Image (cartoon, rainbow, N blue to C red):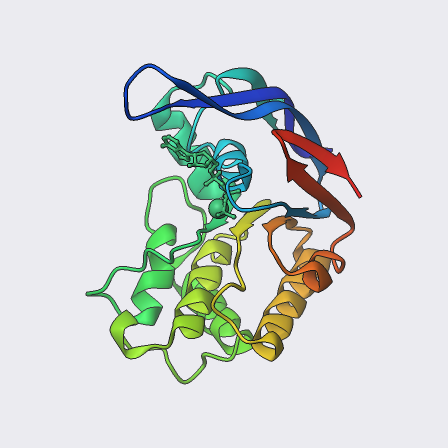
Length: 228
Ligand SMILES: Nc1ncnc2c1ncn2[C@@H]1O[C@H](COP(=O)(O)OP(=O)(O)OP(=O)(O)O)[C@@H](O)[C@H]1O
Ligand SMILES: [Mg+2]
């Protein structure tokens, strides 16, 4: 089964002058199976974040289509997209977007609150503890974001993205703020979860050695995606 599939995606932005089109993605097709792991490399400004936002139902393509688990979700209304995204997709952004007034534990449990979530409060708490322990944050549960290092914040963002056991995890330069050893630990936790829970991974990274740990590696350049 394809967890996510995009077909002939193009995307342009409109420049601040309100007229000029900025073409970013030209003709992108990508299918990712359940349990597969994919890395996307590419120069700064090549459209990696743009592509990830489209795959994560955070933005719309200018043309082309996106389907999740065989269902065309290109034109589903925003409200339904929100629910799909909350239950099926974990997202780790280039910036962490943790809530400053909440503790680590509270931050990672927020995605378990919305309606439609089948996880009980106790199961969410148990999973939260377990994931935080696995990324080395078992002793930081009650810290607030400003009391954490940059790399710790990034790891909290990962746990938050994984708390609902999504079918798909999208991560945008997840190891940017991390030293090599911590990055490696984190990638290994991700690959373990990929095996254990069949969560599909799509990871944008500049780190070629981590990219190679994924099953398939693509380069995004000049608006096109090519396999390496
Ligand atoms: N909202 C927007 N309006 C106009 N142009 C945009 C907008 N968002 C992104 N762009 C432009 O689109 C291009 C692709 O941006 P994107 O963030 O997808 O690149 P990226 O590959 O993720 O780069 P990086 O590696 O630096 O994160 C950039 O040149 C950027 O300036
Ligand atoms: Mg980016």
